[in-house]
Length: 240
Image (cartoon, rainbow, N blue to C red; front, top):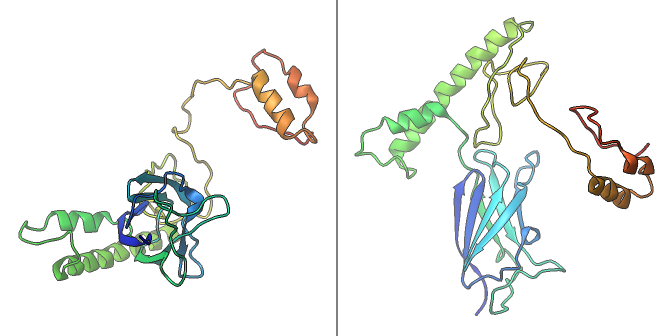
């Protein structure tokens, strides 16, 4: 039986799934999958991990750019063929090993709120005319909001905003509260002025690994690094 793609689902902005006609070999890995953008200035998605559950391949990626056309490419490598447990190899002629899909919608809290407030008689999960209309209206309102904040931000470039809390969204990009900044002074997991307790250990094993990996550049003196507390910051330097 020829191995082929049966079904493809874009689960979220960071996960897609492909179902095949036969159970997949558990040796298929990240190198067997690529997701390319069909727009020149949009980078391809980074494949972070793959999971195999019988005939279903789950691919975890970097966030998709909204509404961008992507092509998922399943391919064999010199080290590992894209094959089934029956040793049938996926054919790569033409588009047999490709699947085209559209990037998920970008994060829009206004759209989410408007769709959540819709009466239950409307189907807002599928791309129905009602959902498309509400989603389009929400996008326009969000654009107006962004324009207002951008205009205000342009008038007050010298205002410094401290400890602006940002939570990473599911889209490929995030927005600052004032829509922009000409300089980012600090990025941290804790507010300014908060002391964080912790230790950084430099063991003999780390020294041996550095000397082994960078034997031509690493200074052997790192093997005699003292055990006394030195600093709460560290950076590995192998060129001195």
